[in-house]
Image (cartoon, rainbow, N blue to C red; front, side, top):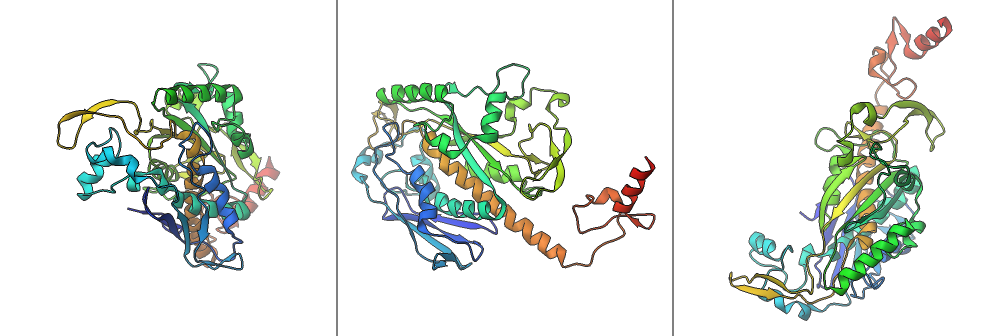
Length: 421
């Protein structure tokens, strides 16, 4: 369907060559300062025509707030967002009257609906993601102001050119890669035309994309995303585990083919003695309170489907764009053999422009989970405190629920043990 989320619900609309695209966002808390400029930043990072290694379609993707705000403040009511399609060229797609494009959605949309948009990719076009990016930009702003959450994505691979994920065979993931995950900023990502913040790798990626474009061909790649300062406790086992919902969100983006979190498939080749993340005493950077942290983070910030307070990081794989100008032997709709050389304006590689889409979809997921967890905590806080539970059921000093042992609360028991030692 065209809706995503439960408490923070996003409904997108529009096709590649219709009059406009956009979304309705429900669940935005009241009182958030919000202007069109706040949303435009991510839309401008996503828009086509940014460089000569992206599509030549020229769209400024200017967003128009339609509802849900007054005097620059959210009302708590549904927010309508609209972006006009300006540079439409439906005549570029005449050849698709005869041919379903190989690996595109032309045939499958006909199989499902019995008809399809007559030009472009319709709902399968990346134009559909404009609504997601706009909705995610709102979520990002709330998460940043309320929790200090920071979301940064970057290109990790293009074709066979990739970041150095591990320098040694016995490393789960290498220090250079993990340093990027821990500290890279959007400004560093956007300095490179490929949106890969590792300059030497970026240059190779750019050369590879240009070579594919010169041959009227295309390339796939992958995007790494990190979510920092995520509150612990997000995720809804068993079927809405945090990584499961992130995977759902990411694999709903056009052209995606894979999702892996933390150490991913590479981590499956190591024994538990190396891959496990030992706990250590640490500090919650947001509150300054003592908390448990992990000395490594191969789990990717999620354990048991619930965030543990560490950085959440994952990688999303994108296939090569299906529409290419290179001649391809294929069948027409009537089954007869032919040769298709597609027209239109298309990215030779989608991953540089996919970066803000991945970031904003991640924000929508975290926003939805935050609202759900806060509702649970708020409801629980209204109940009388419990004073009869064993210490194995509560986290000392972190819960309104108090555990008791032999008539004393767990804090007293722990202090007594320390004194005895």
